[in-house]
Amino acid sequence: MSTPTPRLEIRNITRRFGGRAVVDDVSLTVMPGQVTCLLGPSGCGKSTTLRIIAGVDMQDQGEIYIDGKLICDTVFRIPPERREVGLMFQDFALFPHLSVAENVAFGLNGPKEKKRARVQELLARVELARFIDDYPHELSGGEQQRVALARALAPRPRIMLMDEPFSGLDNRLRDEIRDETLSVLKDEGTAVLLVTHEPDEAMRMADEIALMRAGRIVQQGAPYNLYNAPIDRAAAAFFSDIN
Ligand code: ADP
Ligand code: MG
Image (cartoon, rainbow, N blue to C red; front, side):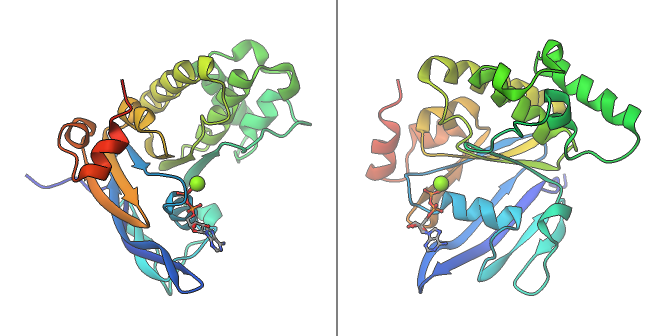
């Protein structure tokens, strides 16, 4: 049986700042339709890795492939806007002067009717159809988050890159929004690379976890494998807070 082509593959990515490798020979894959979590403590190099995949930063070594096609090595480089990646960051705010519909349609090209249909489909999916003509300030934090998700999904990205997208939400909302987000992403069939420093978030959302520490991936596998068979004491301690 042949192995399917990964949706995203990064190979031996290294990024140095002032001589220090903050991302150090990192390789990982995300399979189609799956959620891979890049999990590790603050400062370990997660955001830098994500920025390199998005194309807003550049590696010193290594290659990135989407659906088996090279999008970036140290010489060749497809620009960010042509990588077909979706982005969601904690502080990735909606455009305040645009309506919900206009926010979701922002990255879409093509005929007006087609755009409208896609916007309606996505707003129905995140259960915000009734807010289509409202403005961001009229929505709650959780609702704004769902609009941001719809906006990021609108152009049908090959992969969604999410950098701690839930950390700005209060505890009460967070679990609910995580679950809703996951179900929307699964419905759309979008592959996801989710960056988080919270083990419970990774356990809840991931099909696969890549555990990162000081710039390196120390263990990658199914959540239960990392939880039940942590690679070392530090990994065990990291997961031990989960209840
Ligand atoms: P994480 O997202 O895991 O918290 P980051 O990727 O943001 O980690 O940062 C990893 C390390 O790289 C940190 O020590 C950070 O200070 C450093 N770093 C990130 N960006 C830069 C930069 N542009 N210049 C110098 N150092 C940086
Ligand atoms: Mg970060």
